[in-house]
Each structure stands twice: as C-alpha cells, then as structure tokens.
Length: 433
Image (cartoon, rainbow, N blue to C red; front, side, top):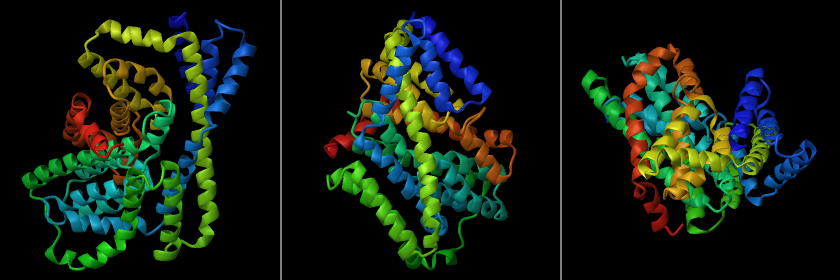
C-alpha cells in the first residue's frame, strides 16, 4: 500500500505540475490522491484541512514576514553599491580583485537581502561589466557571480533555516542553524575567492589601482550601518537578548530607519509597495507551508516515510553510503525545485533517515540547504544559473563550462560538511546553543 500510495503521489504531483497548477495546489491534491485508496475522501479532506490550519498556528512563523520585509527594504536603492565599494576595498589587493569584489559583495548583500537572485542581479549587474572592461573573461565573470550568489541563503539571517526548523518539528534551534549555516556560507565564499585568486594569477588579471582605496574610511562608514544588521541580529539571538521572532521585528525597525532616515535613498511613499510585496511573498510561503503539512499527514498516514526509509536502508545500513544517497537525491531535487518547496517536502522524509544514521538535525539542516543551494546554480533548470547567465549576457552552456572548477570545490566542501560534523556543530555548541 505504501508503494502504491507513493506512486500515486508522485504521478499526481508531476501531472498537475506539468499542467501548470500552482505548486501548493498540486501538493495538496497529490497528498489527497495518495490516501484515496486507504480512507474515505471526505474524511481525508476534512483532516487535511485541519492539519493545514494547525500548521500555521505557530508564533515562530511571525519571523518569516518580518525577515522578508526587512529584506525587501534592504533591496531598495543605495544598499548594493555601498556594499560593492566596501567589498572592493576589502578585496582590492587580492589577485583578480574585481571578481573577488563580486564574491564578497554577493556574500554581504545576499545575507542582508535574503535572496540569491537579488544578489546576483544587484551585485553581478554592477561587477560583471566592470570585469569585462578590465579584460576579464566574461564567461568567468558570469561563473564567479553565479557560484557566489547562493552564499546569502546560508549566511544568516535567512528564512530557509526558519522554515526548516518549523518543518522539523520546532525542536531544532534556529540560533544554532544560523550560526552553523553562517560558518559554511563563509567557507563557501572563501573557497570561491581562493579559486578566483589562482585563476586570476595564472591569467594575469589586474588588481584595483592603488588610488581607488583612498576613501577607505568614508566607504567603510557608508557601508557599516548595513553590515550592523547582521551583527545585531546574530549577536542578539546568540546572546539571548531576543528570540528569532523578536530579532525579525528588530530587523524591520532597523532597516526602516536605515532606508528612510540614515541613507534617505528611499522615499517613504514606497512603504506601501514594500508591504504589498511582503504580503504576496508571505502568502505564497504560508500556503506552501500549510500544503506541506497536508502532505506530511498523508505520507505518514500511508506509511510512505517508513517505506522510503526501509528502501534506502535496504540498499545499505552503512552511514557513509546512506548519507551519500541522501545527498545525491537532494542535489537532483535542487536542480528541479526551488528551495522553499524542497525543504517542505523532503525534510519530513529525509530527516528521520539522517538522524537514524547518527546525523545531528542541525547538521542535516545545513546539509539540506547546502545541497539545494548548489541545485539553484546547476542545470537543467537551476534558477540561479539562468538568472546569472542573463545578467552577464552569456550563453548558459558557456557559463556552465566556466563553472566546472567551482562545482568541484562545492562538492568537496559538501562532502566535508557531511562527514565532518564538528565543522558545523562546534561553534553552536561552544556558544551553548
């Protein structure tokens, strides 16, 4: 029965997705279809509706719209260029300094805005043409922008870890996920910078002229208020001054002051537009979250997670092999599905398997997001890949060729994250979270 339900679930979801139905509707319909052979439809519909409503009855969910709103405000004019100047100041003397600036800018802007696409377009849109004018290969410039854009989805504050914590049952510390994800996000960026430094030295790419950093103090002061958001949020959560939900409210107040009082680049008349955009994004996320609750209920009722667990463990009970299978599955999923829905669908399926082979829920959360981030920049349908190629105005296949060494480094880091738990868990444990 579990196998039959699984096939019905998958077939229904794929069929409705191909027809173009909204993802949340496809998920709920597939969930109901999967249990249609087990119980009366009217009972399943009623129970699924109850589960959907109950999943949204969580105080922790308040953090989602607040962090989204702070990201929307930070995406407004003036923030990106200030961070680009600071990144250029930091990376100006490193070989391949303009490409290094692109990486540092994506790391800074990505975590503040909470969007890899926003980082890729805002920072890459400025840096890729600059690199081409200085003699950099445009395909490499596109690859650098694409490969470094997802770092902001690992470096906090990011809603991905909040959603994962909620779907995982709420027992996984958001603060621990933020800290662990930040470590891996920074390592991702540093690996990209090392690779670019080696390539730039080999090709003889120029560094920033000495006079370009003469206004270092002014550049730092202009960018410092934006960077303080990260310090306030992470510092406040880790020190226990406020919770993740309270931190999201602080983030909104801070970004409002930053945009309307300090920088004054955004007119107050834009606030209704920001609120509407936030409401639209929050509504989509909440609908998906409630749909995932119906899916989780249907899968548990049909015994699908148990069947999948037995199938994977039936291949091997060796933790090394099981973890490898989980990662291969997530990499494939990430190529075809956005991060939000993938977290909602696959966390309840794979988390029990991961914990059964000894993986900590915090470590698995980082592994899950890491895999899905890589998926956004890999073919055939990685959104980050296509957006980055479009920003750089290069053909996707040429961008993929230039991305190959970066893919290799990311896979190597992914394996280390999987098989060396201390890399993700040491700092959260040291901080007592």
